[in-house]
Amino acid sequence: MEVRFNLVAPEAVLGALKATGSTDRDVLYAAKEEFAARYRPLRWFGIWGLVSGALMTALVLTAFLGIPLMILGWWWLRRARRNLATIEATYATYSGEVAAALAPAGVAPIRAVGVVLLALLAHAGVAGAQDPVPDDQVGEWVPAKGGCDSPLRLILVGNQAALVNGKDRVSHGNLGVTHSYFGQSYQGISYVLMPDYDKSQPYIVYFNANEKKGQTTVDISDASLKKRFPLEKMVLKRCPAASGAAGPGKSAKGAASGSACAGVARCIELTPFTATLSDLRLSRYGNDKVLTFSVRFRNLLDRTLYLGFVQGSGLMIDDQGMRYTLASGGAALRGIGLVSESSFDPKFVLQAGESGDVRVELVSRAQSGQVFGTSYDLDFAVREIDALPGNQFRLGKEHSLQYKRLVPDDGSPATASAPAASTPVTTASTGAAAPVPTPEADACGGTPRCFGAGPFTATLGQITQSRSGGYQTIQMKVKVRNVTSQPMSLGFQVGTATATDDAGDRYRWKTASVKGIGFVTPSEADPQFTLKPGQERSFSLSYYKGIYKGTVFGTSWVADFVLQQLEVLPSRQVRSVREYAISFTDLTAATPDAGGAPASSSGETAGQTAGKLIDGLFKKKK
Image (cartoon, rainbow, N blue to C red):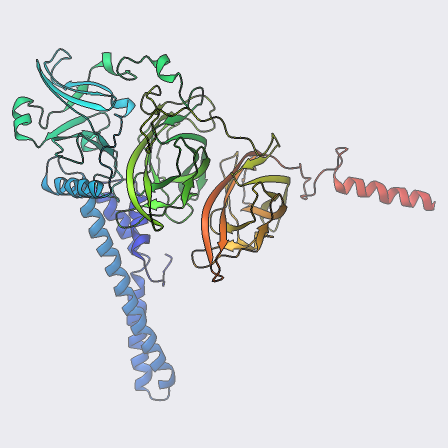
């Protein structure tokens, strides 16, 4: 067994618990014990050091060895106790949060969390904003034990929710749909809809209630409504006749007309932006299965838009019930910052009409005999960050994004849960209907292997592969061009480079494999890579993977990394302005020979060409 001597961080324990993808207490306990097993032997090292050091000190002649050994033993024992205490405390906190999240819908802890969340939303100044009913929840809901002719029902359409009992009916707007209702660390599939969420909140609708997909319940807090509409705690079912509604009076065809997403696969249109999912890739990393995807956000407003990824909201479930959650570490999110209960990062900013890309990694820990699915349902949330005078920010409206029946590397349209596309797009500043923005100009001009990142383009040159020292290496040259009228400094963000081949294997990288550009880490940034308006500069980047018995080598790759735009302040400090997630797909390299040398243009390997030249020299001498 591997023995760890490092100091345990609570984030590492939390990552191990979340990686199980389970809310079962026994599974979480087993994961905690497995994690702690690597740190428990440190106690015996400490006891051995103390006892051996004391004996050696007692002999006087070996005291010069015994005293340091006693000190080392004391240090080992102290660190072991501290590590185990951290593991137990983090486990207790996380398991308590999971237990609270799985409690029945109306219990006090969840109610308290909901009240706190409502207060935060109201304080954030989101009054008057509305979320649409998720597309897969639109329709009429009746008690599961009754029929669709029941006079008692819940109707969810567009931006309205209504309770009905015969001729008695009450409607509410100002809907709030959130996945963070149960806390930012919650990783389940349940989420809620709250009518009048910044006011009285008369009732809460729980989708996928009690972690059961498709099950819906209602928790009514208003005493008069509870008496008029006795739906409290009932399990509801959706009537088939209404399940496919695109909105009030809108057909599926009509819903698509005039939409910024018209004709675009895997596209969701909300009031402030569109979100188009692309490049969904499945890969292996040790015992983990990794799903990586890109989302291109496009600002539909006439003002600057700031977005953040809601912590704890990233969840993907395959058709076998396997769960994928946000990977731990800085590389899980590229190009966008996290929004948590206590902090947020407004680094993902889009000017009016501008587009930007985000790269996300979700991980599932493979269990023995686990069967993985072939299609996936994806669920995550982003939140607006409102800019205030004096370079200040506050949290704004949260948006839920759902994509259904996704298939890796499948270009066919997958369904996406969104409001009816025919709903007029409105601007936050005027409230008037906004026209669909015209397509952005392609700064790449149709150049192959070119990625347009807004203020600059990144174009790949020749890609070569070689094998040496037990590794296969993919090397590429990236040419960056400044397409703005202002100077620009860029840096390579450490820890964000990944590559996957068509065999599903992931390639690694190291800092020595990046040359020609400065690095950006959490503590420092090097702005040496500076471009004047219209200037081009290049840097090189290499990825590698180990060669083992039975290794299958891919023939094409997907590569991505993050470049940060940097600003040098008058105080000579460097500030990060914006992150850009760069991604290239379907990359191929020159075919190497067995020794890794690229083939010549005539089809001969470099070795064969050299042999012919040598033979020619000897013939001339004869």
